[in-house]
Length: 475
Image (cartoon, rainbow, N blue to C red; front, side):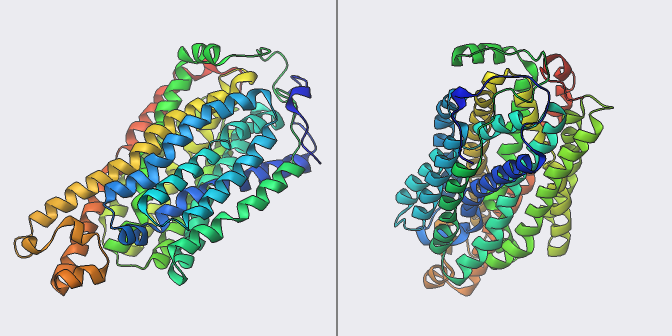
């Protein structure tokens, strides 16, 4: 079934789901696969962080630039123009071509011969991925009526956590068996095939088809008018604030999670990915789905469930994250981080449900793009930089406070391979280096994770304004 031109689709408010149940679920599953690929390619660099850091002798701050800000800058700059294009033209084609672009760029990361080349290809990945979520959210809203959107968007949002899980499941072992370069190439290229499948099998739905009769709508909204309408919408911006804080912490933590387990728990990359990151990511996927399911069931009785479910869940995750990053027991860390991830990822479906639920049908893709502009520029762009800078600062202070070996160690030396450190020092220096860099990243992660509490409070604050701003009621 080929994609049809969006311009030819009528704007109708039927209040009914679009298409048959089987085809609608196929579309949702296909978009989930696309979003999963999006995050496989995005999260992979965090899984294989240590060999990249060691090969190019990067500081944690430099790696934060590579894994976060360089990607996020272009992702956000291109996101809004692509979303504006998606408001008028075929959204399916935009998604398909975006998948192909970012997949090719991911594979090219495996060919990078320098830090600068790798940064350029990561920027290319960001440009491609900018064309995924805004049009996908708009399509889902036209296939599913408001009462079903929280669950549908939560299923779509599971791509974040499933992608992270698959990046760990395959990226770590591939890097261990071959190198980090093969991991980029092997996991990047399948996206080209998926992009073609999306292009030729997903049908572009009529805009506004599933909205209830009487839902306010306009023929066309310019970017300036969209911003004007959003500027006074408290629910939209409180949701953006909460989601940005979660992203700031989450991307910062995920960029250095494998490094933490390698340095502190002395695991190989493959073991850290499979034994710890993979189950934590699967728990996060379960939390994303569970949050959407709970919100759908609770919204009939509690109209603000879409906000207070993630709010309280984020707050409850705080002591679990603190214990998970503080304990020296690998088993305890795993249990704590699994439960914490399940709780905190209940927010993912809510951020999209709220953002597109408070705007007109002709502005949904743009509203999501603006949300992602803020979330990714601040959250993804600065989160890894923040954790990396704190880790470097603390590691350097621990180096200087080592009275016995401080004169033989530098932070730059400690970032090298074991062979580099042994060539310049001794076994004692190697052990001290691994200890100080491990404690630096441990402290950076556990203190940063406490910032999740602010996002939880923001979602609870959102409950005061949400019902006034929602255009398509969930109940």
